[in-house]
Length: 97
Image (tube, rainbow, N blue to C red):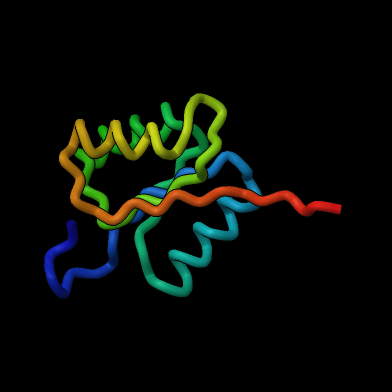
C-alpha cells in the first residue's frame, strides 16, 4: 500500500469489456492521478500482480471475467500477497425491457 502522502496510488483495474476498461482507466489516471495497471482476465491480472509484487493500493475488478470471477481473483490476490487493500468488485446490469 502507498505510504502516507505518497501519490499516485497504484491501481489494478480488471475488466474484459474494452470500452469500459478504457473509460475507467482514463478516469482513474486523468482525474485522480492514479497509476493504473490494466488486465482483461484473471490470468492477466495475476501476471500483472506478479510483476508488481502485489503492491497495489486498490484493486477494481469486474465480477464476470472470461476465465473466472472477480471474487476468485480477490481471494487469490489476498492469499498470495496478503493484500490489505479494499477490493472493489463491480458487475454489469443489463436493462430490462
